View (cartoon, rainbow, N blue to C red):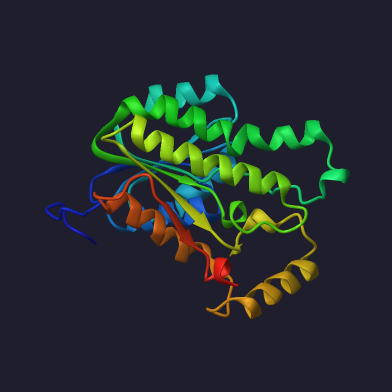
Length: 246
């Protein structure tokens, strides 16, 4: 565990992770807690929140909140008060369909949590971030390398890229960065049949320079780095096993 006299330490810092009950959020919560941070996990499912908190190796507690609802998000940050780092990883499984087969109202719904949830979180969190603190958001490489059927996902990720840069300028000196993962083995793909999902992972792994899909705990180190790195802001940090190269 790091000590509090390190310039780059998370020891004793309050880290709020929205969407921290599973996937990248939970992996980041565990990694931050292992470095001595006091982690606050916020997610929509109370049972999953408590289960996630029970897995933390250090200090932490959880809160249940609808992260697509402005009133709920505002209440969360009023209750939390001042803190050091915000991580936003909340998101449901995306709809993959070609535009001709996509219902427009359904497409709009996916922005409520992944984009507007992040927007509202930043709005209400920013005034409560201590000096030297940061915000780390989540996007994805599909904004740069979309496949057919990814109109919604690519649009959300591109919007998050622009939002990150805008907030880095507007909220300075609070640092605002974004993690852009490739294919990671998380519940994002839970809507796929297990056999289909495994075949998908194998296909992706074979094409990647690293020859494997990402694991949540690997990508969690990117969030940790961006919280600890005092000279990075407005950056889109790609962690994709080389997907954008192939």
